[in-house]
Image 1 (cartoon, helix red, strand yellow):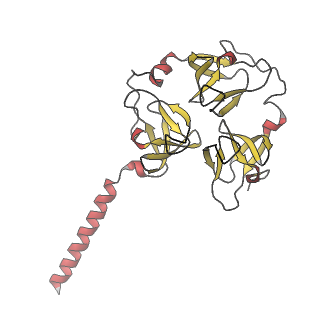
Image 2 (spheres, rainbow, N blue to C red):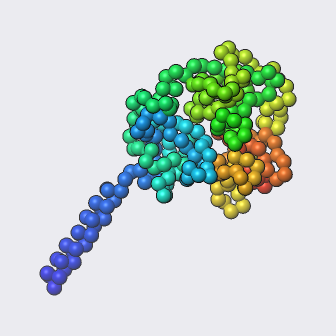
Image 3 (cartoon, rainbow, N blue to C red):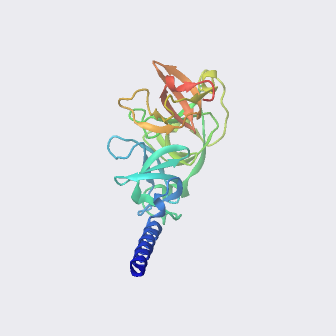
Length: 264
């Protein structure tokens, strides 16, 4: 009996030790909500996308090595992260637990950052100016709308479009809307109207996060992010059941039924 009791304790101790070893061996990268950093083996900027695939999901922004993000989960080689308050996706191979900067070289953001020149947004009609996720009005959605006089970093220009950095995000703007001198908006009927300043809150009938999209439809427009109920947004306009809103500097769309004037 004593020997059986000893064997039982020994086995239990071995099981506990194995569990402890397994717990210690789990990569820290799989801790939800933990801080991670972008790494780039070739010194170029890394694409953050609206969904976990290179096909069917557009590039939300490009970030340099060492950029801090929040990690949530991984599946199929893709990680769900949060960057600048927006839920995005990146290949897990580009995430690291330690911060490191690009070693230079390559044609991406490593060299662009060094050459970045300060520029200011100008608007001939006093309206806000669209900053987009790509260098075209077709195929690339509006990431943000900014006032004249807004400071950005200019990386390069080609074909009438300029690659800039705004709030730490690489975006694109028509070159004609950039100036080397700062000037304010002259008013007008653009984004400074009252519709752009209306505060709304996200509501959810089931308590789950609400999808916001790159355009006013569930078909043809990717999910840009998922917002918690109670998230404050700025209402820009609404039409046919969809609302154009601004949140965390990004312009996105959400079904009007998910907006309320009161904090849920």
